[in-house]
Image 1 (cartoon, rainbow, N blue to C red):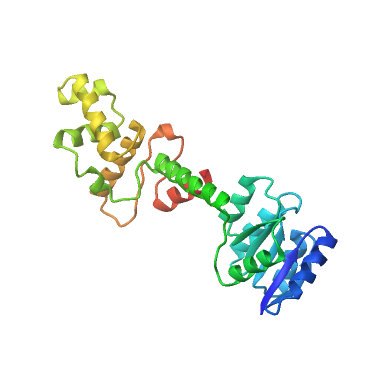
Image 2: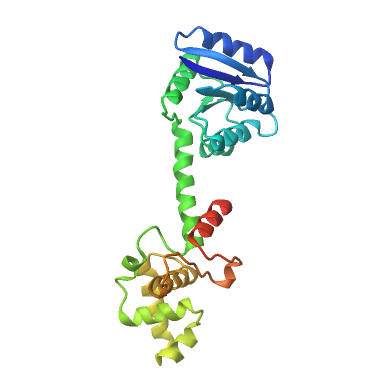
Length: 256
């Protein structure tokens, strides 16, 4: 039996959904709430398999409640029901851990299917929202790359294709040298430095000098560190101070 709670701020809709779901042999409406606060109090008192939340809850109640349930880790799955007035809001619900988003024009059978799937740990996403999630993943990847200065692969593998001279240039980029300063340091022409920088960016699969500088700093730390702690040294122009991988991961999460 799937113990379900319905959270809707309109009593009539709440009762109608409860009546429809109670007709199912494998679904039991074990609780009804009119807002997020009442729902949380009920969740603290009893266990539920699925929480059916109306997208119409005021003050982003659906999103806040979904986020709270995700952090609580009590095993309750979330199904959002309502009009997709904001695709971004719908996507945020999935990012917070919702298992399904059912449009208000969906049938009762579709709602029941979503509840059953959620109870089994499955996720139902419409093609429209799925496309948005794919785009969101790409954006998160881009932001993580901007912040960390490297993609999720071994740094040494990234730099393995660099020539000896390109490695020398990369080290100086990491130290904040300009092209002219690199040219003076290595006793080569500025034009040659620019060619090396272009090749470095291409081989490291990054788009900016700042990203290359971050990789250079990561490589320096990896080679010089004598401890087990993963230490970061980020450029001052990023405006942040990060020293450990945990801090970096936290910063990426907060910035996204």
